[in-house]
Amino acid sequence: MSDSAIRVLIAAENASTRFGGEAIIPHHYFRLLRARGVDAHLIVHARTRDELAQTFNADHDHLHFVEDQLLQKLFFRVGKLLPHRVSEATFGLANQLLTQRAQRTIIRRLSTPTTVVHQPIPVSPRFPSLLYDLGAPVVIGPLNGGMEYPPAFRDAESGLSQFLIAVGRSFTDTVTAVFPGKRKAAVVLVANERTREALPSHLTGRVLDLPENAVDTTQWQSSVAPVQNRTRFVFIGRLVDWKALDIVIEALRDVPSATLDIIGDGPMLPAWQALVQTLGLAPRIRFLGWRSQSQCAESLAESCALVLPSIYECGGAVVLEAMAMRRPVIATAWGGPTDYLDETCGILVEPTSRAALVFGFATAMQQLIEAPALCAQLGEAGRKKLERDFDWNRKIDHILKIYESCFH
Figure 1 (cartoon, helix red, strand yellow):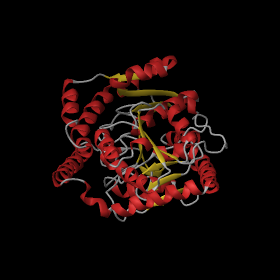
Figure 2: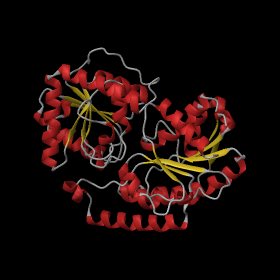
Figure 3: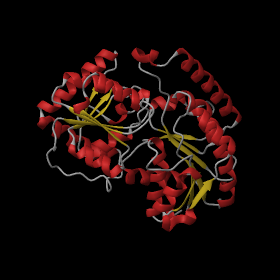
Figure 4: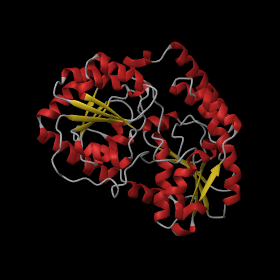
């Protein structure tokens, strides 16, 4: 069967380059599949309608939206009052189930005998799926999860938050048993062994390996020009507690020549701005807010390296974006960054304690400032590793073969 003969229905909560996080994944699948002439359709919540209609104006008849429901609006407002992980495991889950219920109707309307349904997000292996018994094979993933905090940071959440998360996970396990989308899927894709071990039991389909994140190397081009500012570092990501940006802020005290650009927004912004003021680091740290991908690429090109002190990072697409721009990465040796980085292209700091992380990031930043040749060497190795293992176009080659295999 040729690629053009397959109809792909991509079902996701959101598809956006502006939302951050996993929302960009279905956006990439749709964009690149349509570029190859595949009959791909995107089925998402209407909150991304304006962005998608503008970006994919020529493909407007391939975009399908689930309108906001009153109950979803209520769940969203209540969820904003809770810590991120608690909200995600409770009201966030409920909202996504409501979207998936509506998506089932759209999928049945669009299905043909050669249809494959692909649900790339949510990437958590614990989240249930309502996409089953649709008369078409379902591909789910790549999933990426099974995360816990490093042992030295298990007290990062309050006792109440830990209790609510445990309740949310129990609810998730129950819902997964009631709505067995993952168990009935033709293919479940996993990003790593940690995620494979976190899958629900009794899956009837195949479980295959495929990286969650990738970079379109045709969009993320970089030159081999020298770094414009050898003392500038950059952080890119949502400003949420588990990103642990305070680690790098404190580390900057011990690297007097270093400066830091912080790109992103989120609930921790006021607290981290206050910390910068308290430590007297305001002249050396800039909070730049949200930036487009092209602006992020420019910031990476102008910087010495990316810093990612996150202690709960399942994926970390920004790591790959830095590698695409030939910039080394200093990251916590935990979770997603360890799937992408090794000693040839980055510096991983073991999270044995909070003090050890602060010291490790400070040491790594000073090392890169003092050794521009090492910085260039790590950056070049990162670009080569990216092109070999994490290129979006190669990933599309793989996913098309997986779609086709669903009919054999």
